[in-house]
Image (tube, rainbow, N blue to C red; front, side):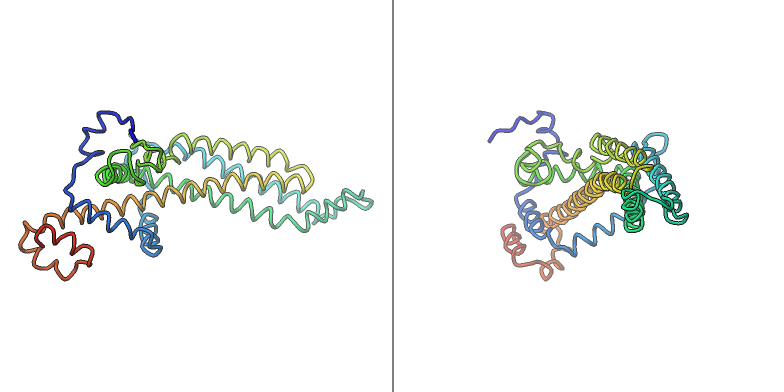
Length: 288
């Protein structure tokens, strides 16, 4: 299978590094263990604790910040408007003393469904705030995350060949080495922009439905929730990719260190009892 890869990528020590066979073999052993749920959770928790404040003001901005703030503000306004209607319909006895059958149905719907509508809008607002925090975290730690993506593409190239395999920038990404940038940073790039445009459209639809019967409001809020859940899914997918990239970086760091062991008599003396059986076989080939 031939893949058209830019010559600059082929010559790049970042994206197409040349590692010793021992380093690559050890790296692959560790990569096989990256589905450990507890391991992934610990690193996801660690990522969640990274700063969200932007130390690069004047140079970098979060393009989603204003969009999400506007969306949350509009949702809060809509919640207040719907609550006012609920208070009017339920608290004041509307729709009156001689309601039509349709008005009676709507009155019952308000009694039954208003709490769920209000909860759904609150959850949508909370998810969008988390989405903003996520994008703030990317901007606030931008050099670290970029270096992690670069290193992960390089790790995949060293292990499988540039643009090959199932790692970052490999076959699962369409065989294009640079794809992980869009996959991991989608929330602050075009994908995030397009999604926020859809969410704002859904918010406008809810705002336009506020004066309608409860069934119409329900449908509009349900559509908004579907859009917002896409933001949550984008956030979760990006965090998982960042964590996997971080793990790859530290694993490659250890692999490179161990490949150098035969040249380090001090470290060599203490490592023997720390190696797994699989690692011992690999290290045995270089005299460990």
